[in-house]
Image (cartoon, rainbow, N blue to C red; front, side, top):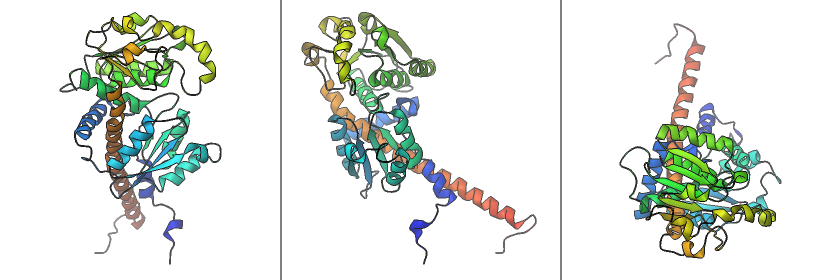
Length: 363
């Protein structure tokens, strides 16, 4: 009797495993796909059990290498509401990349779970996980990007500034301003996600904390296609002027705690207080991905004021992430089926060729 667990995968199975779609950075979605995900998020917000892609339940591995509150709550709740089982993996115990390689962990997880969600440090590790796992991998935060937060923030802006557009880029015609550390993951995600959504994105930051040049170039290329514009300002008031939404983030990201004293002085002119908010559109909303430090990057008056939508924003992590998980599950199944069909067709052609010209298969 053959032990199936020791058999090599067929060509069709191997191709199907490689076909999984992942969400590692904001521009892993096209502008049209981003709209599709946001529309689905609105559906799932109105009916939290409308989609059940993980019914079974199928497991989703959720790995944390960094501190978490909103990410843990929203992904565990979301996977359960999608009919699945949220399999929590303690990064301090798994020690991925130290105790064993990312590639080996990916191979182990990919054979047992339907998707992998990872909150970690290095973008390259996440990319390796996606390359070797064969299942969708979702970026729950890296040092470079925070794309799930970007989607949640777009959803929040849509809800508070007139909804999604009727067609085309999801938030075309609106202006989004971010002030603070322009080199961090939130600034990078706002550039890419905002440009995909057709928004004008203004980053206000000290010159020494500007966005990475390659990511800014990616955003500019996207903006040229969606009719948006991106700009980096070193004057906070120029960045915020006339904006429909204004966001900020902590000046000291995770892993930078030893730099706290050095980093504060350059950012003080970029604090989001009432004087700065007054430069934005009179109906502009305020976002912060949290945790927030009142009196540092944002004043208590603004964070706790009537124009802040941070609690809606925090809730929208749930709905946006459920939407992207559902999107990836749908696309991965379709892509895997196409890959398997292609492999089967290739195998059939090989068999036919082996029979030689002029020979037909017996009925």
